[in-house]
Length: 335
Image (tube, rainbow, N blue to C red; front, side):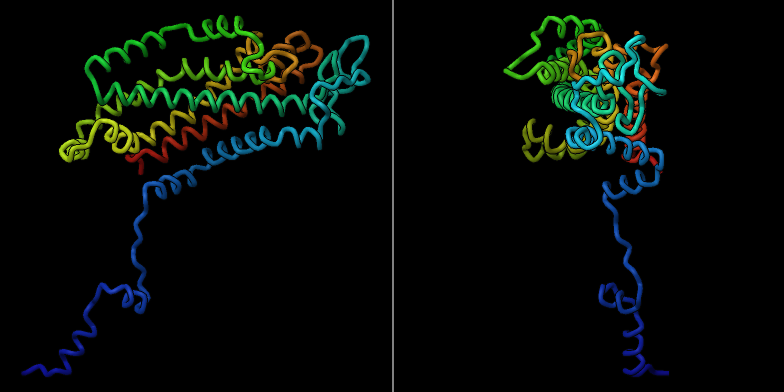
């Protein structure tokens, strides 16, 4: 039995095709690939705990940025005394819960009567500026020296590794206390608050880079033997190009994760230095300084200690939860 031209035409029409137009006509959907960023974002969105931590972080960042506006709307000037809100006998706020009212949303300080709400806002600004900028300094130095040590090897690796070991063994907090306490209160013409903020950024950032430097060095040691590095060398690529165009993009995920995890550590360090009296100088606001001042009143006015303590706890917890979720989302082995 012979097959005529009509049958062959029918077979050609019914045969499958890869033409996108034909796929659209038949109603079939092409499978779209996802980039690594899309996969990581999809994983992060599924992690409700990490998203909650991210929301907390965003809220505190907004509060820090808008602190002057929020203080004018719902607070009082930062160093304005309100003696009428203080019991003259006990030097504690009048009323329950540390003087919390519609006029003073978080109450007032003992003795002075300053608005705690305003000081909490400016304290958030100080803590986040110090923590974030110090983390960026640590990340920059750690990535730079970690890449150089891991890729170049030899005496460069030996020198950088010994420096990192020395700084990791050094008593960071004690040195920071000694250094900050002897520096002048005003540097480069800035006021006492921002000059001390600059000093804290430099000190905390400098002592924090060996931690990320070790991580970057270890990852670089494993990546420098990969095929794409050998291919770049065979094409004549020099060391700077390999370091910053080949290795650094592949290290972006661990660097980003560690940066988000070192920020809460910097918040605690700044609070500890202010608590010990060598951080942000009074009367400038700081969460650690407020907790230090509250030591004398924790029995008669516990809210004065609880409020800044809760702020530190919630901020650090939010950054840690978000950092853990980001680490899981960027893990290529995670399902």
